[in-house]
Structure formats: C-alpha cells, structure tokens
Length: 342
Picture 1: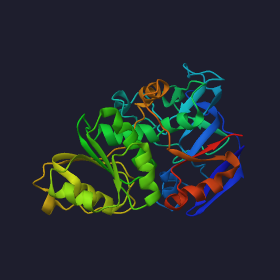
Picture 2 (picture 1 turned 30 degrees about the vertical axis):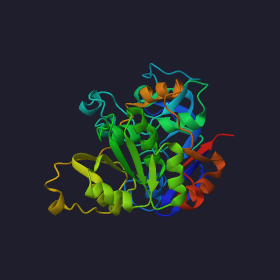
Picture 3 (picture 1 turned 45 degrees about the vertical axis):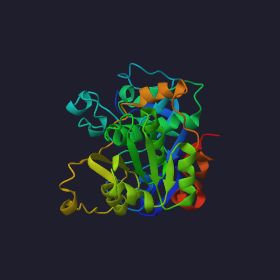
C-alpha cells in the first residue's frame, strides 16, 4: 500500500510500504476512505514529539471500510463503514472503565500515528477495534464523518465540557484554527450569551464569524473590556501559543474557567502574582472520544453543523500538497484539510 512515512524532523515521503495485518485478536484492518492532517502531525514533523520513530506512518483520524477483523472483534465485520477514533481504548483498565480513553493504561490512548502506524495511508490496523471505532451511516458525508474522529470530540470534551459552558455564558475562544472554530460550533449547543473569538489572521476571523461567533477580532479592545469589566465565564485557549494563554487569564472573570485545548510546544508563564485572587479553574486534557456517538447523532439529526470547517480536499496521493496548504493555514485560508480515496 501507499502511506505517508515519517523519516525524522522535517522529513516525510509518500512511500510504498507493506499492508498492515492483524497482530492481535482485537485488531481490525480498515481501508481508509478519508483522513485528515492535524496540527499534531505538523508538531511531529517539526520534531516536537520525539517518541514518534522514523519509519512511522503518520495520521490518527479516519473514516473507512472494515476489511478484516481479529478473532476477538465481536461488533464489527468486513464491509462495515466506521469512524476510526484518534484514541484507542482497551476497555479494561481503570481509566477506560471511567471512559477516560485518552489515559488508557492497557496499551491504548493516542497511539495511531504516534507509537504505531497511523491513518494517512490506504490501509490502517486499528487496535481494540470494538471500542476504538464507531459505526458510521453510509449517508453521512465523509467530510462530516471524519471530523468525529478527533476534532469535534476535542472541542466538546476538552473545551466546552471541561470549561463547564452553561446557558447564558460569555465564552472567549483564543485561536481561530480548526479546533477553535469547532469550539464555537459545539458551544452553540449550550445557548451561550456571546461567543467571542480572538485571532491575528483576518481570514480566520472571517471564518469564525461564518461558523457562528458573535464577535471576531484581533486581540485588543474586546479583551481589554473583558479584563476591566465582568470578564468571560469561560476562556478556551485554542492557539497553542503562550501569549494566547496569557490572553485567557486576562479575559476570564473571577471564579471562571480556562480550558486549555491547544497543543503547547513551549513553556507557558502562569502569572500567579496577579491571578491568585481570581479563584479560577484551569483545565487541560487529552481527548477521549467518548462523545463521538453522541455528536454523531446530533449531526445526523441536523443539530450540529460542520459547514465551513473543511476548506480543502485532496486525493490521498496528494498528501504532501495537503501538508503544505495546511501548514500555511493563515495564508491559504485552510482550516480542516481532508484527503479522500479516489
């Protein structure tokens, strides 16, 4: 098969590699119909995830067709169309028993495209397949379905749920990349009073307005007003930039929540000298994707719209082009990039 192989920092290629095979009785092999490029993939290519070894196939989000199952896979059969979760779940360890699949201690967690070969390929081996996939209706568009593998669950679980968004809240989202805009979409389910998005790129601010932000602006007047006034109930840090976290601490009200959802590749300063009186809660987290079935049902019945999140599509064999477009998101206007089997 063909796959995008990591060869070390700043080095990858679309190579011919052996087809994956069943290695454990709980495995399935899935033919990839759609996959995506994620900010974490860029982080890997820049050398920021040293546990990823040269020779690893990248990618951790996919929709596809089951072509083979192990003897202990009981809920899937060849021909089933499934969403392949970014997180694998053994289902037996203490973390999995609490639906904290991202913290799986039984050999799961985030392993696809990290510790084992991932989804940016024609075929992928999926460990713990019964618990690490969700059946996908055939009439659900691929561009919608693939967002349920990681993006939308991350926005909900790590952003909206960890941030304790409730009706009537003022929500500030710092960073209008794919996950920040997904937070806007999912937060709307909770009837917030206002959703304010902050970013430096004009194209991304325009995208934020299209997906439902009430206010979309560069850092400045609105953050100053929140800082000097009542403040936001919830601030979601979705940029992965240290300055973005500082903006969140300025914007959030006393007793409010900061949900850190962006992947930080450098240290962040926590100004406790000015924050110790604010009684705020700061949360972080690895997505569990336990919410994927629920979000899928909302999508099927028209309660959750992903319009505007997918901006570019490519064939699988144009993986390198997809990476270049996605890496220059502010310049190209790219948000979520989807690659499909042709």
